[in-house]
Length: 237
Ligand code: GLU
Image 1 (cartoon, protein in one colour):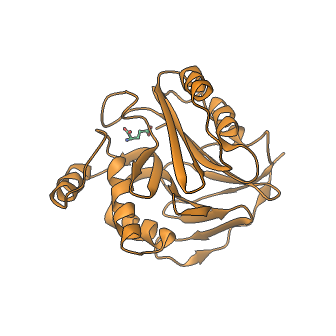
Image 2 (cartoon, protein in one colour):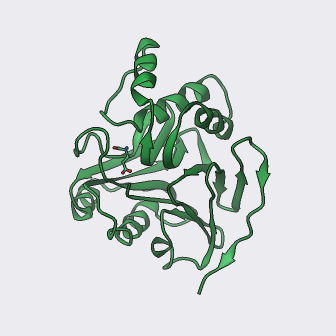
């Protein structure tokens, strides 16, 4: 159970996400990673150990893009390693996950029977595959996440990118905190307020079972049944 950060706007996403992850370092973690989307390509950098290792990787292999997601991992399924570090990719979908997916072994076996190739030992990767399968069949990105979260159970904060849709990130929460930060033509997502404070004081917390669609212009929230939810943005001091 560790940290998640997301950004969509005009700034260079990778350095901003790295700095925001540093604000979540008080939460114990064993590895970290960032994915950035640019020109229909997703670049992923991951590193075992401290964020300085990820920073060194980013220095050697920089990434550009104004939409991205980041993660610090505290391994629950699969040992701490670069390969098990998030973000995890499947088809067009990239995900970061804090928490646990229950019944992941059953899902993994089913997915393997359907010909899915797994590249990590984590429970989180199944979520990427379940969303990617639907998106590949033409299901809308948001709807694909909504349907997937009716299929799986567990505690989660989840944040998704879609390689073919640079206009939005999808975020979901159940038992693990997630807050959206509203800027001017840019939006932020994080596990906790300290990660946002350098950029905005306007925040909205997701509640359990909710799914959000976040664009440069704002966000829309839905409950588990897909009904729109109103959540006023609060100004924090
Ligand atoms: N269960 C996931 C894993 O082991 C996420 C762990 C976390 O919350 O950081 O990769």
